[in-house]
Length: 246
Ligand code: SF4
Ligand code: SF4
Image 1: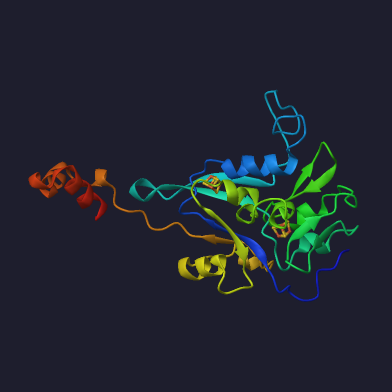
Image 2 (image 1 turned 90 degrees about the horizontal axis):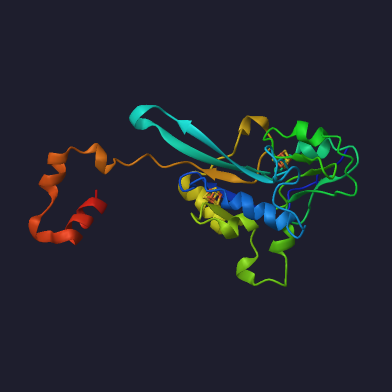
């Protein structure tokens, strides 16, 4: 079995994921895969890439859910990857020391040279964040792009996880949760960021921001009501102003 660091590190790096702005485009999924397994002379999926059922280990996945019914219904896209938990039992169950949590920044990693592919860590993770790479026989998971965020060979502004760098909706934010003045800490405080499954006691570092209440759509308003509000002398810009100020 493997030990966790004795005390929480002074730096706690992780992600804030905004469920209000994620549009489910999967750009983060593709860029994650490309950064982490790119360079092979192969397409994105690991096995059977051109077959009917291409498969592979993905370190970040986006799930789509229908929430609510009728007028209150909405689609929520839910990106999911390792949450770099403080109390990471995926580490403590590891029989070889392959899974470990870094003292200096709290990132949870797998040393693939020590991994025997037993799958115990995947059983211990309540979030389904670990995936066995069946082509290599080792466990894979999000590394928070540790080879990017400390990489002196790329510009400072690009030293963020690949998923964060590519998100066109700015739904993903990276930073230090141990610093109350960091971008991620402020977002969590301002928007009510929450833990996934807090009852499990894993204390995930990553946080999610809830979707905001749905706004009334223009199509919900009757035609006569809409016509009444258009000022004939306001022109198109007047109409746009009225619609945006609702
Ligand atoms: Fe381990 Fe799962 Fe937590 Fe990641 S999300 S640290 S794999 S328990
Ligand atoms: Fe959502 Fe951003 Fe990922 Fe697209 S890239 S699925 S918007 S988190």
